[in-house]
Length: 367
Image 1 (tube, one colour):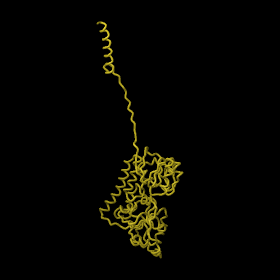
Image 2 (cartoon, rainbow, N blue to C red):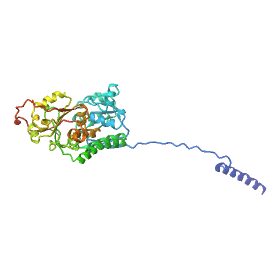
Image 3 (cartoon, rainbow, N blue to C red):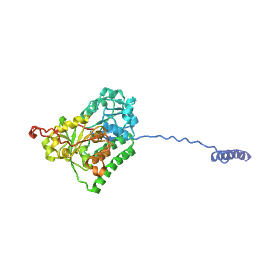
Image 4 (cartoon, one colour):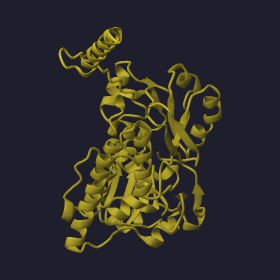
């Protein structure tokens, strides 16, 4: 009986000691817990201008732009530090030519003739092109065979909604959707301001002829399904070529029939004096616009604003509104806009209307 008690007492003691250890009744032991945070980025999926679904598992860090409008979008979205290649026409924002001169961004050729080997040498993980530009689309198979992803924006769309779609698509690829909202709101703010002021004064809508280059190049204009038509309309004008599609080539009979109140000519790099002399030697001198001194030649920044559909679209609307309605918005303040003066000593042209071919659709691209 005594022996049994001796066995029970040590067992009870051991149990009490263990309970005190684990319950921490005397000197509790602290257990350190290490938290490991694992960040996982879900793949990003977008539909590009060719209608393809592209999936991005990682955010691109080395980007090549194939168009000035694309370069402007990338920089406006705060992605300039990722751009490693641009075209020879990319000159905005001012950081672009500066970075090119410093050797931090390479020139990969022109808009129409990008250099494939130069692009490859830059080791990009993304190339951004224009879906409406054949040389850009022609790079797709070769780049993808080398494992280089290429995405296409819709490019020169019908109106600002197409531009907003491009900005939003690029922003989604890089995860900067908030920045896209800022860019879009800035554009829309300019457009809304012009619209509001035109409504306040009940402004009339002048008839407008837009020529892309001097007349001697052909009377290239902008049809009703182009971004330039949208700019003219948003600025309070009526595009006389709005019933046509794409980038039509007009004839003088068509122009004189519609007799524009304002003519806007994109200089396309030509000297101002040469463009003026070119205009004076044609039947454009018979238009109301010419006779009343309302022919404007856009060069450099002003030309870029009109012909490039990008983050500066709102400024383009404001510029054209100043040309069409100076009594409401004041004179144009963007360099460089030339106004052709009225002259009474013009050389009369003897060209017959019948000698000009009817308009036809052309495939020029202005991205």
